[in-house]
Length: 298
Figure: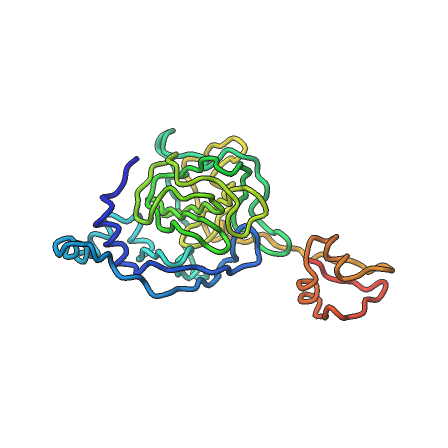
């Protein structure tokens, strides 16, 4: 295991970012919040009072050169945000096409867990699911997809125990619903190194790994990076353009009311909720349904 000299660098990163925040549940989407979700922040805690004066002096000497040297792609992101899972990036801004090197050798990448896909990237129950859900058993080892530095390692209301790693090529990978965290913020990890144990923490309906790949906060289908059934990279190079981040179209779906139907029965059969049916059809839970009436369900 290769770790950054932990005490001073962790303190320096703390002072640089003002971390020490707690997130709240912020989405109804099981498996991960919607893009652009807001995370609650609280005041940072005070630095470790046990530091000697010399240690504190070194920790506060962190400067831009240190950031550019030690933090992966600091020049690209211009920050090291340990408060927000997806950072504060303008995802509407135009992005020039870019080619990212994913691998130079067989040992510099690893599938986080070898499991079947329970839920793919794309529309799900009328919302976007920005990752893939991979089947596992609680306690299974989850490893880093690529070498990088841990930016997030904490509990989150939706993702449960979650780790976010920034990689030298600019990608960030997210690992959610872990039962245990094995890394800390500021720690460097190698591809294939354990970062936690699988579980079902946060908003989860069973043991699985929620795995995301992002670039400057923008979600990428992990299937563009990994041949998931084979557990191998699709290619050693990933080409990204504006088209790479276009969300799949969610086609509207309708249901024609039959005699005896109720909103709760329709919601249950269509895999949605009464509240959502009411919202997208602009009706109330007390509305009278008419035989032949069309209700939008997606």
